[in-house]
Length: 88
Image (cartoon, rainbow, N blue to C red):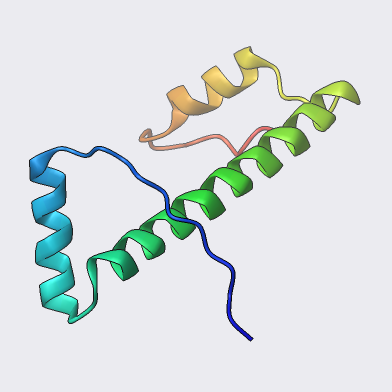
């Protein structure tokens, strides 16, 4: 069974291309392998960011929020002799 693939093309700066080539040499991997790893990690990061954003918006919809003032007061207490507990 062979995997179905698709070629993607992107223009990158010479500096970035050189860094990719250096990593490929250091890791004894192909340029394509490096790019697939990077792209896979970026896609996973963006999917996680989207999931967390949707969860946060759902919390806002049900009123599960912390007032800005409470966060500001807590943040101002950090680094003092008596920092406040995290607002809930």
